[in-house]
Image (cartoon, rainbow, N blue to C red; front, side, top):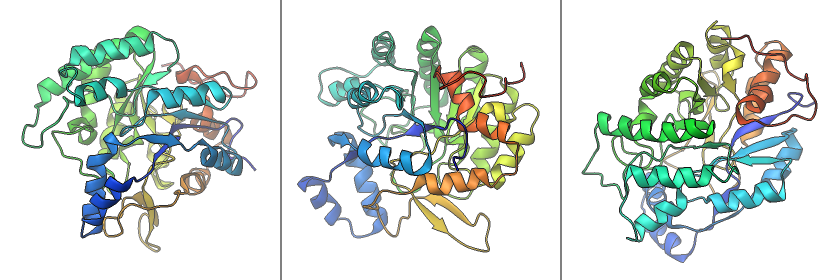
Length: 354
């Protein structure tokens, strides 16, 4: 039986990278699994992605997932995602990042500026082919230097500029929250930037743009077992009507507090798993949580396709909530905020007005 009437994973990566000779050589020099993770994180932006949609569609059919929102990340391209949207219009929609602009900056053809980022986003969203920006808002200067961190004021100024573009086109804006534990993700430099550890910053953004639909990607649980960032995400979603939480990597106990909160509820939750990423699931039976997603530093990057949906759907369907509430999380809310037409009207209950 399907988990819901119309199931949408709002966080899917249909692109993957083949490890060429240079990458294999670099990884072979890394002595430990942790070093291999960090080496990979430094070279992924320069790799050429390939279409991994055959495995994705296979899993969609296995698990009854009707649609996916395609997200670019770590060198993945808008162009390839658009090709998939055009090829499978009933299966996919896409959000955008600034991959072409980033390549021009890396090649020395342009100097990075937040004005340049916003011009590129304006160009992309002006095509009408994208439903949002994400999964990482491109607010961090490039190329980054680990020895030149940027401060909070500069980071939030850059974020506000991106919010203005997203608000202009009435699309969603996603902010990454949490750390996968393997990649070299510094606190105040690099692509993820400091907001991934500070979702409370979204208070400023949601207040300045109250009509902008902001998504806290991963809902504070990208990987690992800590609930610190998750708690901060709940605070923002509970105090701002325009902030949504992505839940696909939550273990089942995490749903209770959000669903019960009268200022959050199932109407503010969307299911998104990070399908296609390289996080494994660690099992620790008789502990809390019994299993969770994480990059296992001792083992290094996995070579197989991780089964995200088997784990995630088992966790969310194990929550004893009303099916109409579950249907909102698994697809109804996504239809509303990404403007996706479901196969029939009146499949989902209307959210309580806020």
